[in-house]
Image (cartoon, rainbow, N blue to C red):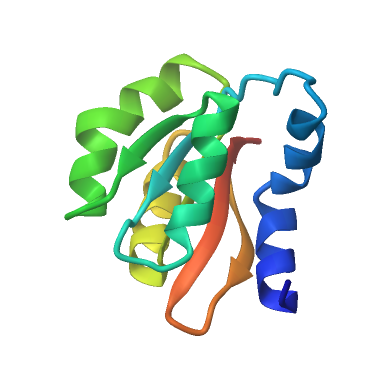
Amino acid sequence: MSTTRRAFLIATGASGLLWTSFGLAAQASTRTWIVDEALPQSRVLVRQARMTGARLASLSGDAGWLWFERLSEEAMSTSHAIGGLTRFADAFVLAQLGAGIGMRATHHRAFDDGAVLWTLERC
């Protein structure tokens, strides 16, 4: 396993995958993951999110549209975190929109191809 892949798995919480192989149930995730499926790293994140029962939202267009049509109501009504693997520009847009309702963005990892792993959580 390469250092980059290991760091990515750790950052996404995939280290818990070992417990599922021993028959222990994976704890359901309350996080919603925004994934740009055009990025090569997205396969790992999508697989992990499906295993933990997290909600997935595909970013196939405008990040602002996704926020207003799907994420803003959910973000305002619950305390669940939102995470993502997107390009820098999309992460910036979503971080600014989240800041408007009191969420703080944290960038966990930047990749060479312009992708960034991030989360939005209530302050």
